[in-house]
Image 1 (cartoon, rainbow, N blue to C red):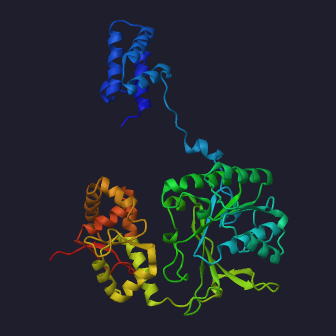
Image 2 (cartoon, rainbow, N blue to C red):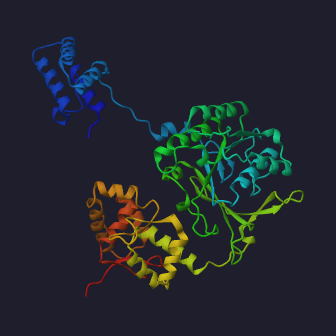
Length: 495
């Protein structure tokens, strides 16, 4: 595999009488032709200027645009050029270092997501963080914010400003440091377009805020959230903005609508949209309701936690209570504390089965319903519990082909897109190679899934390939049972 640049350099070096690092046999067809043209000229004692003239005449007589483009590149390239590659030792000292605006929770200069089910209180929490920044109060966990200006810019794309004003007034917030960007009348804020980006850039340049809050991603992006192309431009803008002005940028993101209530804990699989969104965020915060009784209580305590971060230990989750303001019962005042203050209500049988099902599919990949039903029975989950668990998980789970169709499997969202496309390009090679490797590895003795996944990564097999390889190896069995404590993959004994 050779790049155009490297092949062009070989032609340039030959033209200038230097020793090329490639030989004729290594070149592709158009470069071989130029090599032969130059060699013929050299055999007739042409000097470099004459050879260049010959190449120029060849260019004028040719209709092949690729060949004429190569000749143009060769005539202006530097002879003897060799690429120099920087090491981490050289560039490391100049790389920007991560600084925390809210230690362990929200970094400066990077993108942070705040995700929750509808109605759980994302805007309330974001506004309370703004209040604390403006008033120079401690963070919810009593840590100190990295204050500089004490100013906050709030992009209100959901036309919620009247309620924000009411809450801020009841809280006694210094409104002189809170700078809203309002949605234009009969229009939307589209942060993928320059006419909406520029006012935010100018505000950050003039105000130098500590924090920018965007409410919400779905309301500032007209292109959708289901693939990289839809999100690349708007996320790229937010990331560049955060880095350019070293602000803490908090982007509110709506989760998929839950199938049953909002008390199920938030996971990474609940984040709506492309996996590109999760990859680009350096910190992801979530809020979910702490279930303290048999019924869902939308006024009950919440849990604030970090779902993802790229540096350092995860902080302990915090409890968040929304209590009526003494001056206005329609406005809540937020208070925070350790999560141990509340005792969660025990999970229902359906919830336990749903958690088991997610764990199973994460480890084994997409599975046919008959196999899932058999494994569920070993865990004492009956058929109707399994069906309710599927309904409880809503669109976290999908069908690979379609319900009741031959060959259909249950899969987690994200297990059927890029993975299936990759397998379509080379449907048998990677899985078959991994299956051979897997059997050979287990001949040395049983191994846990975690150990196998690590070894597969070292052997350059992705997790989805490992899961499919297991499905092709009926001689591999579980020592205890899938997702059970102490379980190992092992080879079946042949009697």
